Length: 104
Image 1 (cartoon, rainbow, N blue to C red):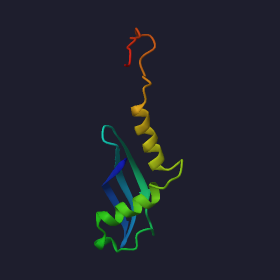
Image 2 (image 1 turned 60 degrees about the vertical axis):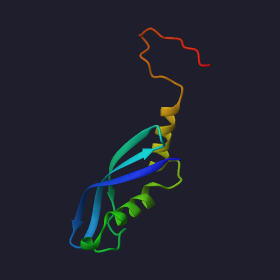
Image 3 (image 1 turned 45 degrees about the vertical axis):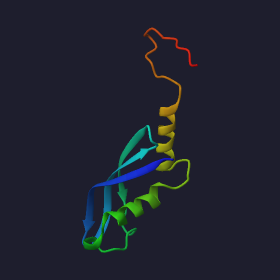
Image 4 (image 1 turned 120 degrees about the horizontal axis):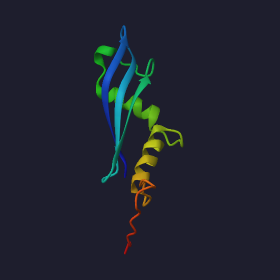
């Protein structure tokens, strides 16, 4: 099962409203992890006054924006990257000697 861990790197407010968030999300499935850093426009998406906002409010908003079951969502892209790490395919350099190994 994939878990998503969010970190707020920076926020921008205008008056009493949170308008944007810089974030880092780490997706992990036990053995592997991938990360994405980004910027989200959250203006009007969090109704709590800026002085009362906690990380949980921001995390809930980011999850609603990015963790949808949509093929183009951040959730799907991170899952695809995790799945590719499990793949048996190798990205060796084509000009180097190839080593054959038997999988038993």
